[in-house]
Length: 238
Length: 232
Image (tube, rainbow over all chains, first blue to last red; front, side):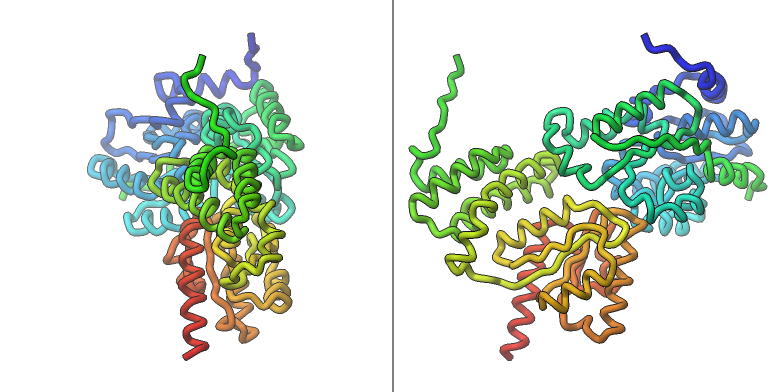
């Protein structure tokens, strides 16, 4: 049996308190998360399912009770060309009943299309190329990027969902011989930890081993996600 | 006991063997493809015919089914790996037997980017279509491209990127070519998952190619036009 770390428990409890229900990673990957019923005078965050736990933890620890969350399936990242339409559809659907909507995606491989759609819709999104960047802090990530060209990044979500999100969709469970074709040019796994959880660290280390890459753990916390949400939380209703 | 009978490739006639090689490519069976290529060579097939009729023919089906959402990346990679096995046997023979050359391409993944699956597929399919390909590999600064253009004198420059953060570097390369007055000497094709046609136009490329098959068709089209212009 796997023992859960003590340090991770408060974060888990925060997520449970904020949602009133338990979050299942598999469900966040495939289905996302529906918003609650309350809508008046509230802010809605439309986010990637891969960020649900982190957003709820940040919301809870700052007491931003006027923020609601709905998530699109995290697995959309396997087809980034579908993200923009999915976000646009969600904004259009929810804006009739929410005072303010913010999009908790970075560019995420949409090639600027998501940014353009958000500008057209008049909603803000998180700055940066992807979550690896804003968790570390976009400026810090940018400063490091030339030295980390061959790094493969894992977040807490990816460490938990690696098999469902990467290993199986890439066919590596059935065809391990493809590993070299996919990851032959990488040299290390950088595990960006949002919370201190030795179980997740071990899992990330095991993933690096499976990929035949060096392992580095880097504690990032919530980085620019928290500062961005903080600015949004204080924004007066339009 | 299985009701399926083992297929002995050497016992198939040419037409059946080529059809079987299409199936084997589709299933990513590298050893079978290598065996099929060797059998056709023993039967005195020209290497170029084996390449175009058996291997490229099979990969065209794989490409079409990938585009239609029937096959996915892992299956395409397995098929490509099988084709690579066949190409490895044929490549030295193609040069010896004077196979037709459609044109020449220099290709590479841009600076800061180490992803080469798409680029490798394009290289292989371009070679299959009769292009000579000089592959610069990954993480190429502008100097690498310029040096290769000068030394290799290709018809086409191909650039690939998988990341939103690295794709703008293609513009750095094209802008440098413009500054040096050599931009119009080459056909510039770009590709990679986050790119689109609009981006290709905005950075001054001749075309964006969404997959390897489109890259081959686009390259043939542009090279054909270039040759027509020269002969007019």
